[in-house]
Image (tube, rainbow over all chains, first blue to last red; front, side):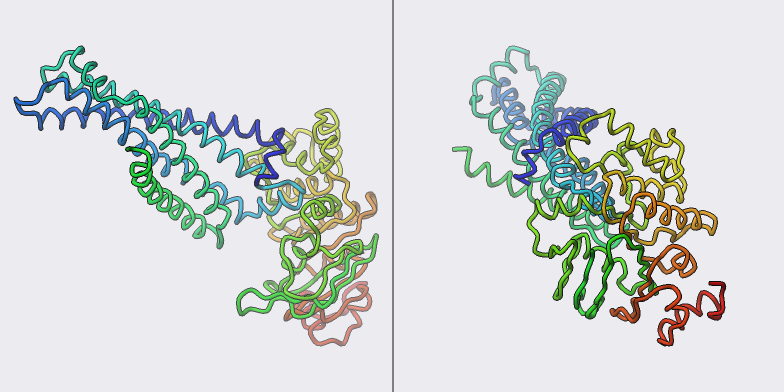
Length: 229
Length: 250
């Protein structure tokens, strides 16, 4: 795979196409999920607030919840299903229909043509989609918290700033990047390892999504332990 | 020249190749016959290095395929065109892009004008219209897909052509067209061809020599005439299944 990186003339255009497909294609579902995540966080914040807590805390609670956890993790889990399943099914079908063997007999590297573009596209686009999810979640939370609590825009912005660490945004992107590596590498591995026809493709696809999801949850815990001090 | 010496291969407990000795001389067309599931395709994949033997030697142009380094194997593969049983066309690419991938010289591959010309020539060689180049594999019939697969295999002007069941799943008319194609390509391009098939009639029309693989072993190699006159029970049984008796027209 590292040797394949030198063949940039091959993988670069394929990566651009792949990045466009997964980026634009995943945008609606990411906007939808992040929007609802922000709304639910806001509504539950409103439900739990008693008179003793200053309203500006709602801003910090929503922003920190979305940026540190909901944005990157929900994006990761959704994309494990959307991109992971797609990659595993595509490569699995190519394996059982001998398209990967055909590439090899043509003297072409399957890593350069199939794996590198998918992994790089994921590594570029998933962190960007995480930032989009964070922004959408915050805006949605901001809107909905004003419907259930007497919070002003000033209160919300003040609360968001008061508990904000500049590293929080970096942490969110690091999580997006880590999940991207995990989703793309796992799904490409499952796709390449496919055996036994249509049943095998189904098995690989399910395996890729389950393994990616479990890895995302493990990484989520590990990164919190290592990076949030 | 392709040479397999005492090649053995097993998958789990199933012995697929059990000491195969098989030779293909330069310029000849050899049909490898045998019932389904006897390891004909596995044998073919050994030649191009997609599968490696458990023991024995596979030599192509005197090079031990299993011992070649990555770059050496890539160079060897550039001299071999492989036609897959179901075409193995890249379904996300057009016919043009599929055939273009068969051009193994990187400089030629990057020259779009050369590629257009080469793809058109390859399509013509397999009797397909130039407009086919813009289509996707899903828009083609089974016979056309096989012919595009052959076009892709010859695009890099290979020295060897390996056909894996080129006529399977085709009606007799299309099967005859493919058989004629195999014959004419061997004559026009001067390639050495190995055709894995269980189509006895087709192989008798096309091949200079035949080999029968059963139970993991080559039980006979020889000319079509030698096969007709063979007294080897496996050969007679296999041929009689297709011809009823062996008194068919020579």
